[in-house]
Every structure is written in structure tokens, then in C-alpha cells.
Image 1 (cartoon, one colour):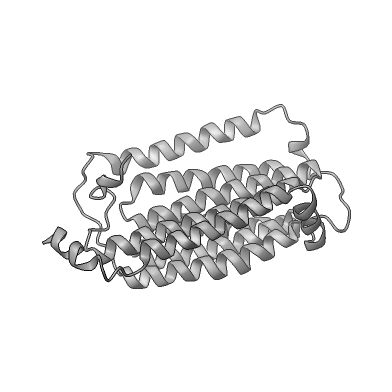
Image 2: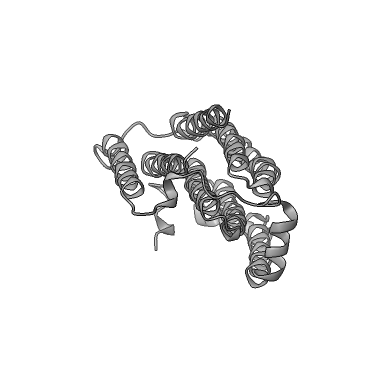
Length: 99
Length: 178
């Protein structure tokens, strides 16, 4: 298979993730869509790593996985803390977190 | 054979991704993401990323998704409001996503990279194997590796601080909401 196929698939997954972040209101699903986008990036990294015959991209993908795990841990911690304090889990109501 | 494997993996990936944003129950969204991650691991195997594929299944589809499943079960059904705070967002968002995909596809197919239209060069038998990746991580990318471990530690401490039950602060918290 040509590398182009993998890159187009990765672009498609990224676009689905972006639409999900824009569409959904639940912070849990928005975190899932962030995972989709990170995975699309990982797929592109591995495709380029294969097309160049260089393993550096795979190490990069591994580091991206670590970053994703950290983001999930902190994001889920915020969701659980908000749920405990009876704050509605809706990103339109969670405006006090806005920078 | 490779084509069949690619399209099977691509269908699993895309179906899982679309199911994540289309299903209303967050619990089912998490399960759809697991399907997506396992199909993606198959694609990683096709790209000769053996270690990445194994890490994807063990760490991602295993550990991280268990975390999601627990939180989705704990928080329960989050009702999405029927009214829209921003009018028309439900129609504009897919259009923006589609526009982004078209833009990326034009950028990919129109790029002058020559190697992109091939299956890639022939690589050694150990390409992407755990020993090769481990060697790279502990030699060339040692600083990134150590920084990642420090980041994981900080994230774990942060999660404990965020989600821990503060018994001393609880009266204050109830007063604030009351």
C-alpha cells in the first residue's frame, strides 16, 4: 500500500476528531475526540517513519502516547472532581475554566 | 493480502472514530474507541511498527481505556441538552470538519514528496522491533525518555490531588454550593 493511503486515512480520522470536539458537549466525549486526533497524528508519524525507513518517528509516536496518557489522567481527574462537587458536566457550563 | 488487511483496519478505524462521536451514551463511545485503537494497532503492524502496535494494545486499549470505562461508569449518563447555545453549530461543525479533511487531503496529495507514492524502502528485519526502539530510547532519545517519565509522575500526583477526597475542605465545598 502507498504511504498516501495511510496519510489520507490519518487526515480523515483527524477531521472526525475535530468535528467531535466541535459537536459534543460532554467533557468525557471531548477527551475521547482528543484521543482520536492524537492517534491520527501517531498514524501519520508511523507512515512517514516507514516511508523514510527511519525509526525516529516510532519513538516520537511512543512519546505522543505518553503525553496522551498524562492528558487523560489529568482530564479525568478534573471530570471526577467536577462531578463530586455537583458541577454539571457540560462544557458550556464549565466556563470558569476558560483562560 | 496487504490491501485486504489495510482496508479491514481502515474500516475498523473509521467506523470506531465515527461511532465515538455519533453515539449518545459516553460508555458506548469509550467502547467504540477501543475498537478504533485495536484496528489502528493492526495498521501499525502493517507499517512495521511492531513495538508501537504492542504498546498501543497493552497501554492504550488496555490501561488507559480501563480508566475511561471506570470514569464513564462513575459519572454515568451525561444528558446532552437539546437546545443549542450557539445556533446552527450542529450543522456548521461537520462542515468545518469536512473542509479540514479536504484541505489536508489536498496538502497530502499535492505535496512534492516523491517517496509518498511508494510503499517505502525495504528495511531490515529488525525495523520497529522492541530491541531497536529500546536502543533508540536509551541512547539517542534518553532526555526525551527521562522527561516523559517525569511528566508521567507529575500527572499521577496531579490526578491524586485533583480527585482525592479532601475531608478538611468538604464543609467549605458544601458551603460554596449551598
